[in-house]
Image (tube, rainbow, N blue to C red):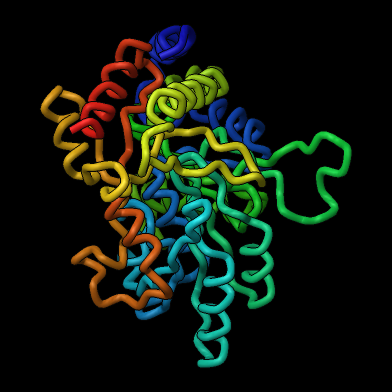
Length: 378
């Protein structure tokens, strides 16, 4: 927590705005939209809720396909199932771990030829790094498929773009992932770079989309003095108290990014020289927040595999986790189509996420690095 969160929560208590909605929610939406560079925002109970409402807006019907990144957490695809849609998974590129633009273009061409384009593309920005939005947005625009950006892990990241005309002798100002597609989704879950303990945000330049999302998220209550409902709704709005926390957290976002990047640099210097260790690369087209420090381990070169290192850390009461198990390998999605898949599967087999919290001390980081180095020496 920063220095302002408690003061803002006390304001919520002092004004007796405790229940969902209230001035803190309104202010959080306005401030967040301005920070990421979007025209409108709706504060919701989770990033998953935001994705669900985005899919309702594009009109996913039972049996409709929705393309989704495979190397991600299941929450990126679960809302497709909420609407009885069918996920189709797209592999990542080996260079920067996000959705492969060429593979997406191939998948869209395949479905266009078959006369059944997907209802939407969910592009996940992974582990604090923006995907390469330019070619992905171009492909979606070519086929008229809405692009929904899942930036739950990438708040604070920047995307500079890959067009040849950019960056010629002048400073290029990056944009926030989540602001180029039809809409973007963010998460404030407890493990994210800033948190409201639980919460999310849906952003868009389309006012009608955000207005409808707010309506659905508030149980689709019609404008009447009595309780009247003409559509099915959801209890998806963010609490006024949690919004107060979010406002304070937003003020320290850049500090959190600096801290996470500093953690990464410590690890890079401490263990980057070990054979078989490769860190998730930072793409030249953007700034990665290093929300999590992720690496891959080549067991032949390093002398131990990913799981042996993870268990050695656990023996020292240090939690580390494998990178996301690809969704096309998850039992719940085993019957869903996938384009590619081998790259994400390999990253899962060899990938490890090291402790990366904003409150880690240098002594904490040294403990982690020492265990990794011991595994190599063994």
